[in-house]
Length: 379
Image (cartoon, rainbow, N blue to C red):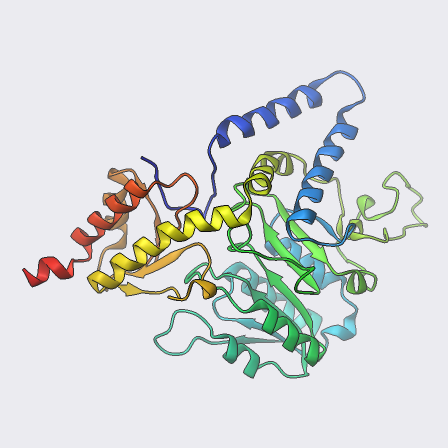
């Protein structure tokens, strides 16, 4: 029985340790060889990671590159935009975005001359409604950052509707797909967006440090990233100090010597997702999530995720009672080899392909002990 409910933190798949170890062992052998083949092999492996991500989100070739994380990817994008795209305008973001991105944007607002406008949650609600985001989105919004699936409610936005509104407003539209990619369908071919940021850490079962930035060709051609270096050029080995030029594709968002290990460590997960298929991954996840939701409704527990599966990612969040001692509950579940976490009084549960139905039933039984069971109260 695997009681792993932490795909919102670190994703895994059957045989992950073996496949990741093999990839890293192969790299270690190549990197330690006393010849001149290290960099060609390492850069080829990084390119396979880029190509896997390009296929995953159906992006045009040459529009995607690596980043350490979503925060650095967003910083690189903003630092490359023409000044007039943001200066004197609003940058729109939801209050339930990933906090790291809000921290970044708040710090950049003065230097880039934009006003950060954060759409709040309605009192007592767990996610920002799409209609509230749209209501704040007028033509003075230079850039809007959409969260595909939130990390605190697993709310899945209507990205197609939001992107269409953004195009009508003339805004740059970007999306953070971190908490949804790999368990929910997403395609920039189906839904044109100006940029995408993400990491490979969650449902894609990769490692930390394996982020990406994807930029639509029309916007990419106008960007001049301030974070730049020798790998931003068409030929990184052009060392003429007076002849710097940006590459004409996503490589212009590269800078110094690229990190390789995170891409290598994440490739097995990406390849497993591609082989297994998003539909199969989501179907298995949905069965387990619906069982948890059914138990929550049956027991009168507080749900902090949408009931409609079309508006939900792969996680389900439950409200713990005030003073419910979340840490104690998490520890008790851990003692039963049931692994999850909490943010404040929100219990986060994300079953994936290694999570068993038996583990879900064991989780429900333990939560009935800690949160309460309507049937036990009635008796």
